[in-house]
Length: 326
Ligand code: UDP
Image 1 (cartoon, rainbow, N blue to C red):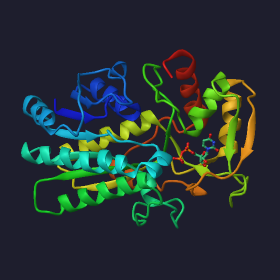
Image 2: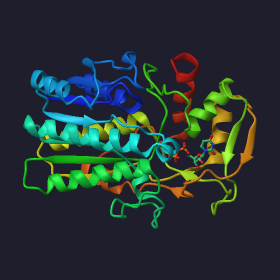
Image 3: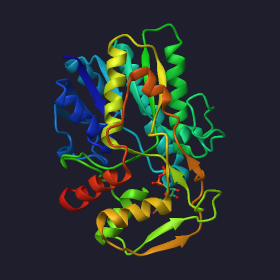
Image 4: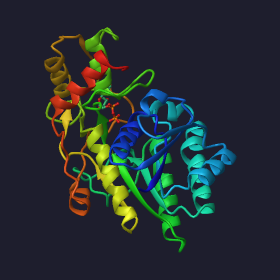
């Protein structure tokens, strides 16, 4: 079976992909500095605790493992922090990605799957947003993802042997339906996580950021995708590259969204807890509506979501909170 090197495989999304890779029989090596990941989250293969800054270690691991393809999840992901600490974000998300791409080139590894984000679109004009919409990020985090996408495009057009798939994630949520892994990150900012933690009693209230948006109930609309459906999208993208597919970019979302109020109601319903909710001012940089046009990944890869159900997404997040390590 092909050998896959997964950076950030101990993190939230990476660990769900490592689980699917392991279940399908791929040989996996996770390369992760464990800054926010956990060794318990890596259910298959070997875990190397190292940083992508450290090119010597990276070379040593490529020499030993000789991967057929690389999946790159390792990155910083907190938008407000990226505004305050842009260099930290450009260093880790861009410069360290260049290290990885250079070592891949040295070892003749030419297949790359990249964790991109709907943040590259900024405030898109078209909703649902297709992949053809221009990249126009509105914060440093989104800029780092857009920058790497441009590097990948140029490398792919350079005449060198290099092919990539960039997956633009919408709002990833939920946890492994078997309850083995899930979100475990300090000071979470994401809506579903904060809401289930509020239901659990970790926070005394949930704030709704902005109730005067141009949407039916005044709150922002997002396209929430279950982390296991997203992980499956990585498997189909990997198989596509292994079979010789050309470089390409795909949105990962369900193609429909829920408002913040709808999510909050669903969390109360699923958890059975009537927690306190307060209306707060808008959070800076939030587009009113962000929903994926997902026709491309469905058509090209035959990807079909299995968990397109908000209550199920919340149920898995809740079970992880109360029974897992969330
Ligand atoms: N949100 C909220 N309260 C929270 C966290 C998030 O009202 O405690 C809103 C946020 O303003 C956005 C939506 O929920 O409109 C989704 O935010 P999240 O941070 O989960 O993901 P993003 O879309 O920013 O990637």
